[in-house]
Image 1 (tube, rainbow, N blue to C red):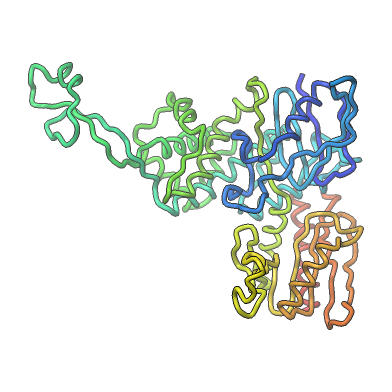
Image 2: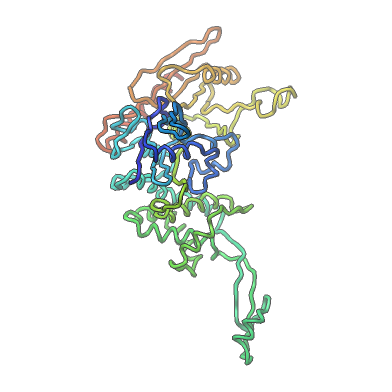
Length: 457
């Protein structure tokens, strides 16, 4: 019988795990060193492979207070961080909800609770329509169904580089010889001579293993209960699907497993770089049932979202309307110089000479924090924002964080500087009876935070 363990994110007290069979699987999940090294574990943001500051080293679970009987662990407490989603291994399923999920108590979540906050973040960041997810039964299915809704966006993103082309070996038997003559086939099929010659060529083709993988994913989604609404959202998506269909005339459903097995490892192409993420997504969609019900021992699989990244990207959809710039620290884009002249002091490392505030404009620095700030701001976080304010000569700095208690904003004046630090809690609705009501309430929170920021300026 499978073990299903429910968590909320950022639960530092630790949830006791005492089932011996479950403990061994939990220990395996917690021991993953680099998440990107688990091939059947899909991570978002999908640009993890581009990042260089260790986001892919985040732990799914951290363990403490382990109790042993001999060499066997019989009890342990599991803590969570910013990652949310689903992870499975052997007979154990770990489901990590956002901490704003309804019906939570002491880090535990009702199996049927609606994670409206996570749904909303994904909808805003990835521009998807997820109303149909309300009709999905299990938590695991809901998490995997997000992949279907992400497919159109990632397909469109990949096609922005053009249709994937790859060299393929083609066999012909005609009178227009333009490749290497295949002696064996010539003897079998063309003797006595009938005016044709068997030969093969090595040519670039649109009908290749990558476009076939995408085509199989499209056909899979078409048969999903709400597949039609996914692939027919707008004319751009319809056109993208048609491009793939037209490029794959040799499609055959019976080839699906062969195509999937060809993509167990990511393809690396110097030009078609955006296809790598789409390839991983397609494999996960097509292997969903095999991953879910397969019995391959110690095979860790699942889908995880970095809550801190989602929160920051969600805030960007709001703050860009207030003309804030959004620096991308992890990709080293959109930063501000710390010194008047570059490399002014060779004793300072070059990567330390650029500032990457989460959000900034003329006189305001905002730091996006997904972690708890109700009990106060840590020293490092405080020093960081003050440094940004000093170097940009900004008079206002603040921390924007999600809050379930509807706390009031706070203001603190800095000593010896005409500047202020603000704590800006963003209220996440907790009493919505359905997703539609939740959206109405959180849009009210968005308007309130925008009004407060405009008031400060």
